[in-house]
Structures are given as C-alpha cells and as structure tokens.
Length: 149
Image (tube, rainbow, N blue to C red):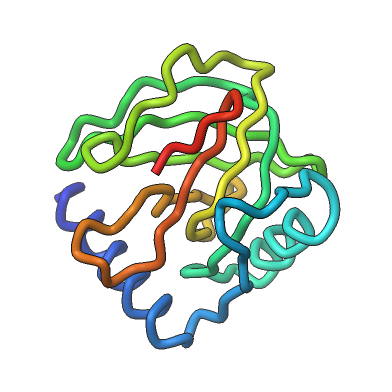
C-alpha cells in the first residue's frame, strides 16, 4: 500500500512539475551561490501556506535530525533541515541514484535544489538527484563543499 502511494505521489509530482500546474519557482543551477537567507526560504514558506506541491525550490538549512534510511522501494537517506525562517523540512535523498551524504550530523549545513511537496509538518524535499532518463530537471544537495546528485 505504501509503495503504491509513493508511486502515485511521484507520478503527480512529475506531471505537475513538467506541465506547470503546480507552479514553480525558478532555480539556478548548482554552480550558483545558494543563499541560506531570503528569497528561497520565503518561497518555501509561501508554498507551505498555499499547500502547494510540485514546486521547484532551492535553499539550505541546518540539519536538525538524521533519520534512518527509508528502504521501502527506492532507498532514501532522510534528514530534517531547519531553514532560516524556522520551518523544518524532511529531505528524502534517493541513494539508489545519488551518493549518500556520509558523516551527516545535526548542526551540519546542507544546501539543496529539489522539489517541494506540502505536508502538515512543513513539507518534503525530493528530486535531489539527477534523472537517469533525462526527463526531469536535475536536483542536488551540497554538503561540506561537495555536490551530490
């Protein structure tokens, strides 16, 4: 049942992202300097207030908690980020498609470019990796000066 819900959520996200019905926030490529304060965090706050999903976002924050990996279906490294606007987000980073952030600990800083999905706890960031089929904009994580995608 959980796997079916995950597949359905990914399909909806993919459709909304590619056809613009969920709205999107333009984000520069990974070579751009990421601001941990200001516009990107405000966009995520607005997406949360509007209960928007499928929104392309870029920001960063401090690791509040490292969670166990989700090994149901595609494996995901999971952790909670606290943004400068005091929001918390779950990051679900696909480690079947991108390298794991080894040594990640609370207090570390992680920048991200991915897709925001609303939930009542603040939201989830996913698509923080490349698309092996080349049909989805590549996302990424930046940790300790290294780009993970």
